[in-house]
Length: 187
Image (tube, rainbow, N blue to C red):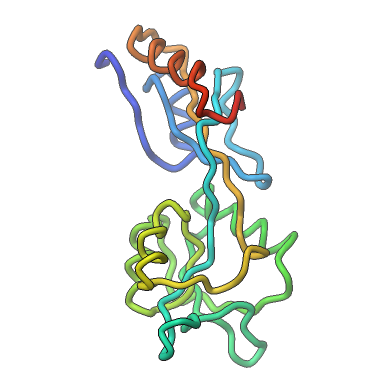
């Protein structure tokens, strides 16, 4: 294994790799529900916050969304779904079941890659819940607009998890993150 191995994947895949010592550090999202993937007793730090926000291409006015929430029974909103094969897709599904106002969606595309759904949203194919960090530039430039207000957001914590695989470089990086005044706290 290299001196420092950091991997990015869906949360469950990273959690498994961390528990098995295949990588040194993992970056995971965590939402209120569903519970974050089990990383066992591994050390974790919350290093940031993000949120999944509903976005759509703008409609003909250039301001209002082409695919606004909540939709209607006879006219559901075209939805670009992350699916339930990803942690953040399950976080959206949980929020839809437990805390979102009544809404009407029709899945027109499903992809576990947020960047792929961003492209479809930019093309006007539908509404997608995407990490705000991914679409901030598009929102600022007006290429995408919010498809609903903050009640539709799904808050996320961003965590760095340290496996027990030996690595002095990973130890130093994790300690720097822990000591940084910028990180929100231990997860």
